Length: 358
Image (cartoon, rainbow, N blue to C red; front, side):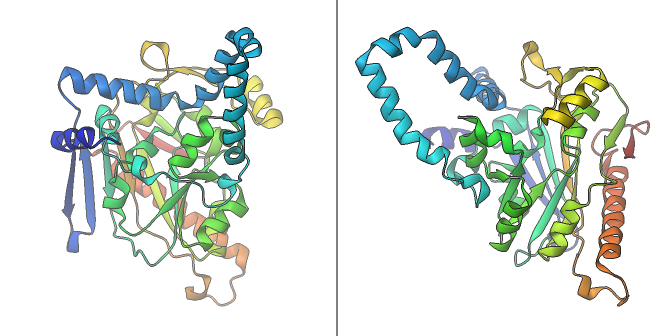
């Protein structure tokens, strides 16, 4: 992206990084809101376009319907559409989402992300240094409605927290079947959330980010509740993945995201039926101006201590594989709860805020 824009954003100095603890083990990254009309307008336009990326494909389809008469009757228009499809379709069916993805690092690491990160504003806390020679499965909790927290890892923030540890984010399969949405997901480092894809990524030495709570936590997100609900008790697939690929588990907790949207509670029988039979999470929510542009709500993302999953290092030689999975899962859940309790005050949560693990 343009050098003038990059220099302007770097001059704003919206991101600050501070090391503390023994040998700089703890790293805290904070973002401050941009000031000035022009910069705030740029922040609004960028964030608005970013948040609504899922609609790009539908918008293009709507434009085609509106101008269908012109497109069908103009030889030039038909030629342009035909050439565009010929150029685009190979990339649509190339299967990138089931391999290593197609990240656009120049965009993903561009300082323009600091405009959105500073809007909330965001804060990232690394509690332990990670060894770049190892692989990791980062479990993020809770899922939230739109997983806004993933934005805070862009713009070079991830590289500052975990140098030498590349990642891919596991995303829902339908996201890769919507033109426009597909490209943005791939550019930002997402791949299909299938088990085979996750294994392939880890076997190539790249760590993964997973959201164990999945769609159920979308419905559990309640901006008016003092209780944060995680669906984790029966979610052990990510633990099995880490064990099979000899990757460490890293618990990660996100504070504040639940306050970014208002939500209409759809009757549970309706939403459960759609989710169970059609894999469609029906949720009605909105932010500022009745759009998906989020409300301002400070967000804090805390990365916990890595958990070694190597069964060969455990002392009980009689422990079988399933018991080892259960033990690691309990240890992981305890670590997530500890992250919440340890950091909730610093993240702006009051003593009345509680965590429930279902």
